[in-house]
Image 1 (tube, one colour):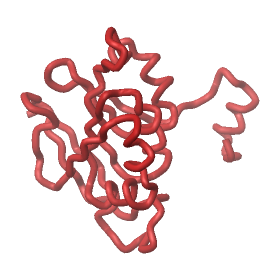
Image 2 (cartoon, helix red, strand yellow):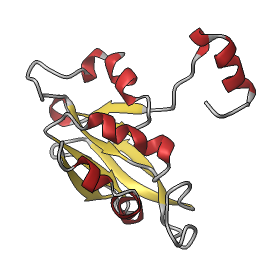
Image 3 (tube, one colour):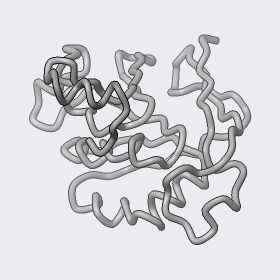
Image 4 (cartoon, one colour):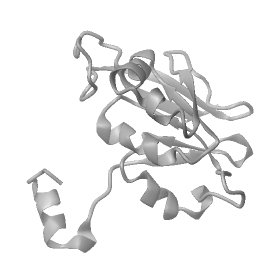
Length: 167
């Protein structure tokens, strides 16, 4: 919204051209789904994908969890949109978890609504979920991006690419 690049400017002139933040969903074992990064558009993206839509129960969702590649707001603001679920697994590196729980106080904000179950994303490949043929691990990529921290660039392992592959 506050960007004047050709893509954003064009989208304002032509509302049908509105672009969304990048997201990727994939199915793990048992028909459960994981989304890489929770963008501000996650609600619209879920509604556009029938396999991810909630129901039939009031708090039932096929979305098992999120894999966060960093603590950028463009990759994490959508977590609040998922507060209606009974619980959600969030897979991230420790520095990303620290930025969100301590820096943004996300746990305190969401705890009245849902339970976030945090799982460390490490360098060793491990199954995404029990019984899943998808493995995931972190690949160190650099700085934390826009996450609030008094030591903003002090942690080289703050952000990570999540490497997923079928076992």
